[in-house]
Image (tube, rainbow, N blue to C red; front, side):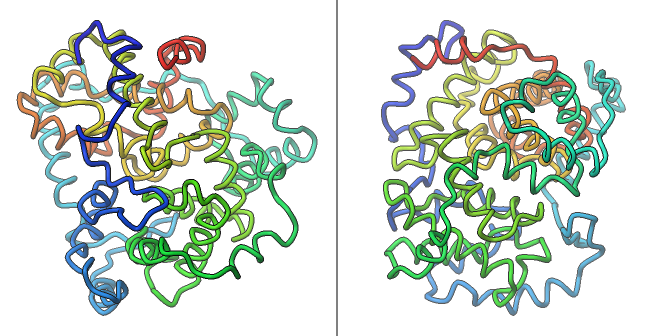
Length: 400
């Protein structure tokens, strides 16, 4: 898309699905293996050859052997392997070498400019006990606390309150949904459950509580909202909620509220909301960084190719976990505008390298889909996003 991309161009970009296969079979069993791979982790990608088998958990023996190679488990429960992340490691190696040579402004590590101090769990629980979501969002002090990161001890409660889940929750409804007769989409859910967060201890075993909870939540949502049913990417959200400490039923209602209130139409059969947002992001990128946007356009690197997994999984697949959590804290607090600010902030951080060291579409996508951790440290990402100024009114004008 050119620098003059307008609302008309956005409508064209979001009108159909022939231009790129997003694997977005929301609500139907036609979600293809090829499309779904866009959102897989490296280990899940390796296991995708088993898609055609009737038993998606046939890879458990392979994973059992794999777990013998665990180097360590981090504070969030993610397993790190001796040989994991080969492509990410290669990208990081090239990026570090470029910085060492003094390449662009990225030769020096970007430093966060926000003076932020995270609140304690006690402070967060006191705030959540005393104020509703509207009052919290109206406070500049709370905004600064959110940007500094919600305390892990209060994050589950924060997500429940800020998502608006309480307004949707109905006693006994989740149990009713989980007991309904099976839908055809359950087969697609079953395939994806076995591949969701395979590097996290909670979801590593087919017989473990994590996979059972994830399966029930996704099946219940398919029953709850049959217009959407299920679309890959939703499992990443549910996994984050469970890892953050939400109980199973609470995680279901937070999923329902998030899809309804924050990212409506992302998971509909035509992925209309997702397409609109990636097209709007491309306009905003042209406005903010015309040189970078032009370079990407010249190489045929459309935003759909790299921003789709960013937005569809709300950065859970694209950022290191500490950064993803910080983005989610802010996203829950402020809504979808945060996604544009974070995406543009990442573009700011990556711009010099992309312009100087990525002359082809293969190199551009390789970098944008495997961002080096040194580039996207949590404090750095939040600071970069906070420096991006874009109004909800401007976003709405671009959409409508």
